[in-house]
Image (cartoon, rainbow, N blue to C red; front, top):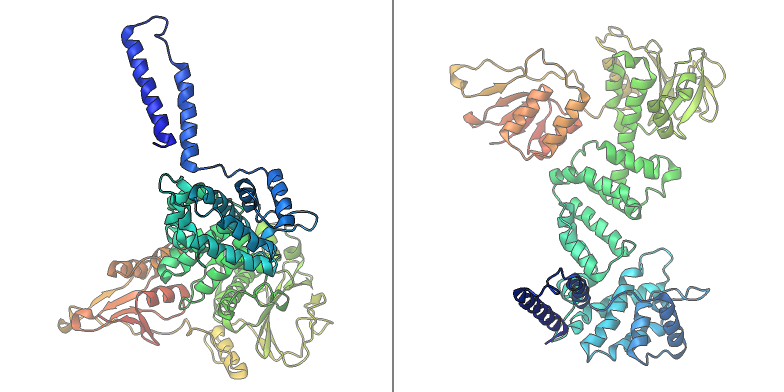
Amino acid sequence: MNALDHLKALLNALDHLRALLDAARIPSLNRPWRVEREIDGHISRLEKYIKDGASQHVPKDRQEEAIRRFWISRRLDNLKDARLVCFGVALPMGPQSERVIEDPERFPALLDGADQFLPKPRQYRRCYQGLLSGYFAYDRDHKDTPPAGRTNWETLRTYLGDRAKKTIDDRYNPAWVDSLQQHQTLFSTDPCGRYGPPMLDGDSTEIDVLRSHLNISDKSWFMRRLFLAQINAAIQRIDSEFLTVLERILAMIRDNGIIHDEGLALVLNRHACIPRPPLAIPLRDAAVSRWGNPWLALNSMRWGHVTPAARAMVAEWLKLEFIEAFFTLLAEERSGDSRRLEFWKRYVHAIDSIHFALGTDARTSKRPDFVTLRKKMEKLSIDLDDALRTNNAFIMQMGPVVIVEFGGYSNACYGYDATRPLPFDYGQRVVTRVNAHNSLKHSAHRLKWRHQDGIHGWSKWEQWFEAELTKHFNIRPKTPSSDLQLPQPTRPTMANQSTRTESPPPTQTPLSPVRANTVLRAAMTTTYRRQALSVLAAEFGLRIDDLTADNGNLWVRTDDSNRDINTILLRWGFQYRAGKGWWKGR
């Protein structure tokens, strides 16, 4: 009979004695049993002690004394010293912070000394428990870890894995030993992989029990690997499921600095693998906040863990944000006309660099949106000296041409040959007086365009700008012109009554940005269903031609100018045909 059985027998005997005394109705003894409650408390603590095994709390001073003796003798003469040195395997000692695990001679001697207790599992596991504690405490991947420490930690990992079953006793085993047998992957090269998927889904039961039994600290390297395991579980999911958990993963990265760079790089690289990756504003902001502007050379080292595709993706997102910021905050477009914004958004892929010339109001405004924008524009903005305090300028280099757009809609758009010296210097304050020193308006311009419809043989200025960029610089928009005319629906005849055409009302109210974002996010996380397509079409004013009843295809009559809708339709199995729209077979 083990100790726990003895305690249970004692408790049963006390219960029996109380019953006999109650039956005898002895007044002097017929009272509450405070003593029994105290005994219950002691028994509970004893049960926990027996279940958990020997305490893992080992006084530091006793560890240090035992390590000093071992450091000199390189021997473990008794179980007490063996246990103390095993628990102190990663403890820094002396002014040089020497550790047993970093010593190429003493560390093997420690393992040999612990092995002398292998024949007696209950003794051996006292040493094993200490080595296990050191395994979780010592960070092999820390930048200051010496080569000997890395090598010995890997040896310890193999040692603990090989001897895990040696801690099992035929009579009784504490909870940590039982837990150890169920989690042998702790000593693999991927110790946390199995815990990532359930934790990502919100189930931490298994890992909570494991950490409690093995006393794994919040400061252990194990926690970093546990967070990364959840990220790895997320990036291995299909696109739609990955997008569903993206914000949750970003929140975890934000709250745990130990994985910030590595975790963010994993997520960015995965997002860049999505065909036409949808704009993820929290992901963009997290990356730019952490590593700075992705196209500036001075930030190249910070972006070193990110693939070129991911870096280009964020660069395009940031340029798009800057274009939108200029034409909504810094230009006259904030009054409602967004034509310039929509035009230059189509060229974001061709922009190599961006600069802002900020007028007095933009430089000094205390409005939160201006303060945030100026912070993002760091190293990209110069002062603009202009009589009009509200005037600003947006400068884009696209290959061989530098384009200058001004805040005032009536200002002409200037284009300069980037292969020749520019008439202005980004390192100095700029002005707008024509041909003045460091002026953005200079007669040395290559192009000078006005935002005026019905001139030069074009009905709209956008058509003229596009033609000029193509003709002189071979710069083309990423998507077809928004003026693309799609085939008009034909009235159903008796021969094609089965054809279904869904069209939104001609007076449909445009979606608000918030509503549009909500609809897009829902669609991105939904598997394809015909009803889901109808909802998307109704919200965004898309026309559907369903020809499947006549052995034809299902058509969505829109171009590919909206990247978010493109992503959704591609994920749903549609293919694009220029001039006709998106189609999906039966």
